[in-house]
Image (tube, rainbow, N blue to C red; front, side):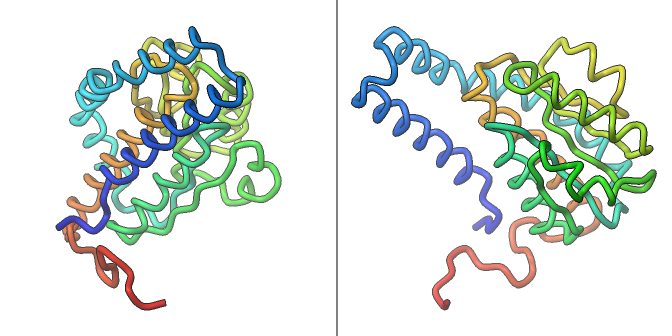
Length: 213
């Protein structure tokens, strides 16, 4: 039984998305046409997940570059801030590399002090949402010689010109993007852990369920 369950995170996002849509409709905050548009986007997620998984070999190559890092920083804005937290958590859980997730908007209020040529910084920079602000964050990181791994929307040009590595995910509405942007981060953690010889299914000191507080 895998302790660091990736499917649980994805399922939680899906259920909470459906719950949010249901509540929004009940409170009159979303039209029937908008509801159907969101549901149709959600229906297409499985095939977009399959497309995102095609980046596995590329992610593995990136993992080989950073497998000996001592620390990693993860940044995301809006819907993708929790994804930054998930990415950092997975890396800590299964590779035992120290990692922290932060809101990208808070980067200049502390985390920026950590950035140098030895610090890998994973940034979620999809095209919808807070794109311009995230690009600004990436420029700040680059000026401090941080090593940038960016999760971008397929076809992105701007971030590709700034980042050391980019991993593409399919285009999707902003509210659904965590269902796709999470995947390369989980794969990155997995490949790093395997390369370091860690047991990815049974990480040390962790259990599938916590029964003692």
